[in-house]
Image (cartoon, rainbow, N blue to C red; front, side, top):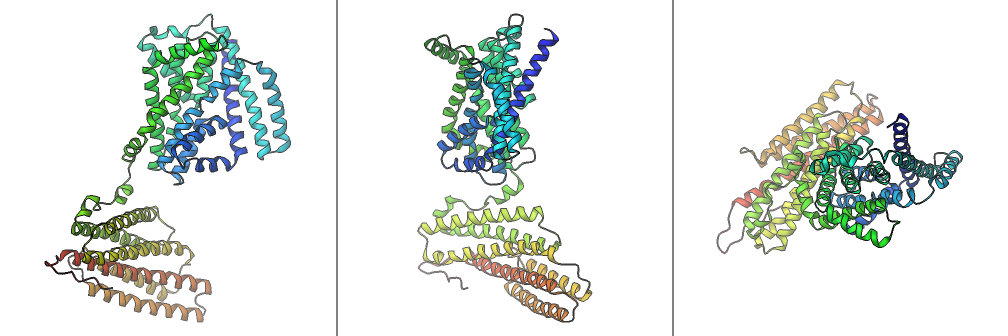
Length: 552
């Protein structure tokens, strides 16, 4: 092997990768928001998800781009795990389009006859139209030409190497050979971050006689599995759901690869038979393109019925403490048939929600900066629990509840509503803090801090889980807070009339202390109704009697 041949191989790979990059980037820029809109609209049904995943990947010519986009959507909460998985299925079928381009164009036509004009016309359009959508289309056209110029260089180089090198002899043709070629395919994709590049090199090497069709098929499987490395790199530091998408991608490609390996002799025999019907024109490259498509379609057929099972398993992976806390602890549909137990479970879950709301309220009062990550996480936890409670209450209402429980059930929704208001006001307080300028007047600053401290104390008193909890103490504490609120409000207004505070400061501070007062009131109401529910759940009605209903 001379240095010239080595240089030609490297140059061919470089041209191919450059062409892929220009083609992919140009199409992404030309598509603009269309790619995102299509991905979002494609997930309404599993079939549409697979179809559009195939279509988009075929157009963009990169399953990695589509996978990273899906991970980004899932990371941002714009797409569910179930929706993303179907697009992943389709993207694996769509990525086989590169094999067909190489097989049908790269070895059937005079490449330079259309590749060089495409490069020239594309770059002229890019220079004339600039970086906009039309310029991006020119860049994609130039990339298309460079892509096939790389194929042409690789094809020529492998034709020279074919008579002298036979990689199929590596490993002795047994199991070791299979492992070796899977590893080569995987490493090629990992290094170049493009399974399309690895497969194109494999196809051109096969056409040049460097490797046998059987070895090339194993290489294709290895490259297909290696495409998961892009998704693996994309989810570093991502959300748990995004990591689950990457895991689904890995699971699909690995399972598909194992199936393809197990059925390799049968699949190749089947495709060789088809090759005989198609005639001499269907060479080994076309057979490999058919093989690449066939085993990915076969993977979708096998895994589609198992998608829901896989999603359930994936949801148990990469769990965070926040996700575990957001999962109801006491709500179990099995207890709905026993109304007293269901009511007790509901009361215990509401108590958990109250603890989270109080934690958020205290956190909001103790910070003078923008929203902390913990506050955001707590809000997400609370919202998920609130949804679960609402669903549980609906199920209870559909069952045959005793009259005394049916009358009490609306109060559980009141409790959830009051605590939800506490969490909303906690967020509003934190968002208002940056508008508050440092207070130079010590008396106002001291009064404001005392007001905050009184609210924190009231929140601690309003903890219904405490043995010493007293509804009277909670109500008395709230009255003191309301009195302090009016005193602080009057002080702020007087400071404004004396020019101590400007109008903007006064408005911001009045809004802030109003949010704090309202948060205290909502917390007190939540504690009042939750305490009533707890007392209501403890007492058991005598035979033939009703429980007293809770009074607002």
